[in-house]
Each structure stands twice: as C-alpha cells, then as structure tokens.
Image (tube, rainbow, N blue to C red):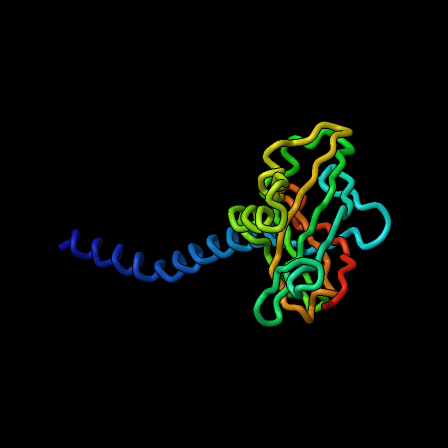
Length: 193
C-alpha cells in the first residue's frame, strides 16, 4: 500500500513538472536558434564611404558588367533578366588566416532584396561561353579556401541573374563567418538596361 502511494505521488510530481520541462526545452532550443541566426545574419553594413577594409583585406570592384540585352555580346536572356558579372579585388592588409571562412556574397537592391551568385559549375560554363580561351576566376567560396598573407592580392568573380529593372540600383554585399554580423557593402555602377 505504501509503495502505491509513493508511485502515485511520483507520477503526479512528474506530470506537474512536465510543462515546465517542455518550456525549458523549447527555450533552450530557441536560444540556440537565435544565436545561429545572429551568427549567420548580416546586421551591421559597412563600407559605403571611405576605405573598404573588411575581414583583413582592402576590397575594390575591378569590373562590373551587365549583360543580357544583346548590345555588347550575343547573349540574350529571356524576359526581363540580366546577367551581372562582378569581379572584386582583395588585397590583404594582414595575414588572413581563418578570417575568410564561410564566405557569403550577394547583390542587394535598395529594398533589401538579395540575389545569390550562380553555382560554381554554371558560373564556369558562362565564363567559357563568353570567352572560351580565358581561365575562369574563382568565386568567393573557393578563393576563401586559400588564405592570403599580408600584401597578397586575389581576384574573386561571381555571376548573378537579376531582374533588369533593379540592375542599376545594386550593391555587392560580402561577409565571412568570423566577421558577421558585420558585412561589407560596395555600391555598383551598372547602367539599367
């Protein structure tokens, strides 16, 4: 009889504590999700004026081309689409080391909409189609695998498919995991075509 009363008491204690344990489990999971969101999200945007030093390097736009209307290349894209080829130069102002892990690059318009680059295979195919003799330039993800030493320079080229109406109002935004939530934004001078 004593054992049954003890079991009943333990059952009620377990039953009453269950909601608190569920809330605690959800809270811990939500906290981890929030920390991951902060780690991956670009909250502070720098670089619209002055030096564009970010993640241990000085960043410059080497070239930004807008293609797809048939004016300067035979490439014609369907509908209101344009291909943006963005080539960035990065000169290390210090040894990069692990500062360039998990590179993210995209094009952002004034309303905050973001376009991600084409994947590596498609990007290389586009490069070969436009200039069969040229060697494709690595994108951000591949270039970040070889950290620079102080004073070294690298080129990064990414290709984006964007709507024609926003092509003249885009900025390049680049970030790396160790530097987030800070990201570098560089306005592009593309003619809307």
